[in-house]
Image (cartoon, rainbow, N blue to C red; front, side, top):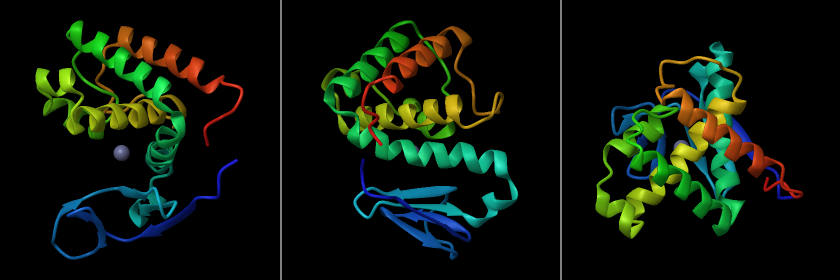
Length: 167
Ligand SMILES: [Zn+2]
């Protein structure tokens, strides 16, 4: 078992140059941020009033830690699933984080497994976990076609059934 992960809430979160700020006008508004090395998740205080959204976003952030520990074979397997989707012209995603990354991808990113591609793989993994385990059945951000969702669900079932859970 890994060390514990600290969770805290902070008001008016913004992401700016790789930092997480509270208040001000710099950077972009965000719901949450994770610090993998510090083992800390910070959620926007506003989410305390929206429990369903809060749990979805919490699961997303938690799965950043799972991705880190998933190991290369599982990460590569996830990337293969995404490649199959893209080859099948799958549009949409299961969350805005992944959707934003997907929109920026070029064929070269995929072929060379650039940083952008790896970021997309990570965000789609976290958004898929949040879709599957976050407790919401529908959400405006769930735009991936149903047949692709089914493949992701099956992948996660295999992944989560491993003898040793990665968290
Ligand atoms: Zn994320």
